[in-house]
Image (cartoon, helix red, strand yellow):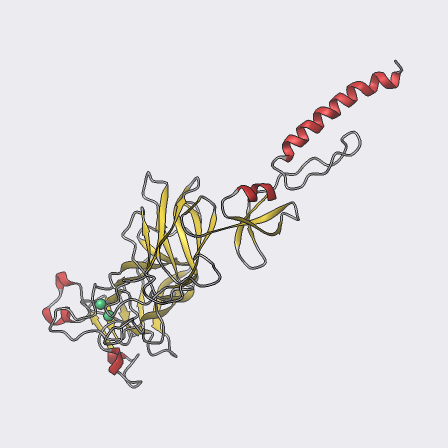
Length: 399
Ligand SMILES: [Ca+2]
Ligand SMILES: [Ca+2]
């Protein structure tokens, strides 16, 4: 055997082992460089399982094409990691389960509409380190509530979570909700119930994001909503400028959803000491939560004249309790026109600009189970839209 052969045999063996190892590694690779000649070439590169965006702004996870195909509902949507992997977007409809970092829950036939019928559910299993979900309603149009604001024919509901989450219906695109996993549980179920006897074109696409406890977007305890900018708007579920045309209801139904009790929280930015809440100047309906909205005209609707405030029942006089006892928002330690208000509840058909220094910043939302008036001697609420309030955080004063 020549010197060349003596050298070549162990070399070929070593290269062969390398090739086997590389092929095993390729199991997890979308792309690996084919072994050239005796196996020389760049080592295989792992696809990083990092968050990625598609060209349509959908959230996915960068993974190998093979791994994406193995994920329930996984759809490859463009390249990531410089072409090493695909941005794998998980999109699922009824009767499914997901444990992906981002899941899009859609109606059957999305982006087409759905005529309704039955209950459509998705079960979300939490990932390691996760104790919260954020639901972004990219599309969510269900039938309107009944004349009392009760989501009767259609509703989105959440079960298995640590809080009595509101049932919502109507039009909610652009709104969001946080859901906490109770300690010791691993899954939460989202359900969309629709009544096919109510003729209506439903559509939904809900982005479900898993939020780790360490994530800066993690909402504080008790916050159904969490806003993280210094300015923004907080809008009640199913808010809209037009009156709802409730199926067969007389009088025309409210858009305001019944049975709500939650907090919309705002993250205080560094160097900001207070928050100012105000009504949209160009939308007189942007605070219509109690009373008969239909009879008010532009001279009163949205003005301080139509604004009411109340006080918590424990300390209220009878007169004060009459105001803002059914549907209202709460602003803690409220200041209006540089003076602390007597009460912290606000209702009616107008909203006076209000400031609060209580941190974390929050807006409480409460609605009762009816629009028929409470106690019965009080006139019913009619055609309430809910609210869309803007907020801005105010910098700390410089002394
Ligand atoms: Ca109302
Ligand atoms: Ca009510």
